[in-house]
Length: 194
Image (cartoon, rainbow, N blue to C red; front, side, top):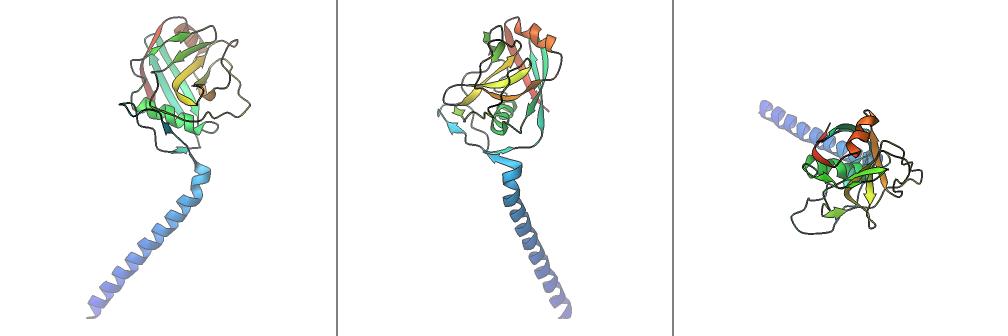
């Protein structure tokens, strides 16, 4: 009988410890969310076979390494989550879905190379700080009026870069590679994250 009572007591203690751990973890998550994540609003624009929006919680900390492979060369990018967490979260989501693979960069100007695969089926508000500087090497999502979608551009010249667009990162390898890529018609082969 004593052995049975001891095992029952141990079982009750184990359940209480697990419940206490769950409560502590839940409390930590609720309090950590405002400082570690941003709650983003991704609004569906179509119901066709387009990509589903990413989950609404976007990380606020750190950066994302991106390898952009084109038929004219490869660019290394670093995306910064701090100022544009929702935009970086969306871009990485689309890249992981292979949304950009095999798509052209249809617009080339003296200032930018614009790439994208149309509209992903959702949009979200632009994330502007008011201190945007569209210098050579900047990567930004084009503001499509009602908000951001999937179209992005890389700045290879200074004059004529579109303002009012969400800056998501920078090119980290040699900018002469960007100049070479931007001088020709280009197709994205693959975008790798990490």
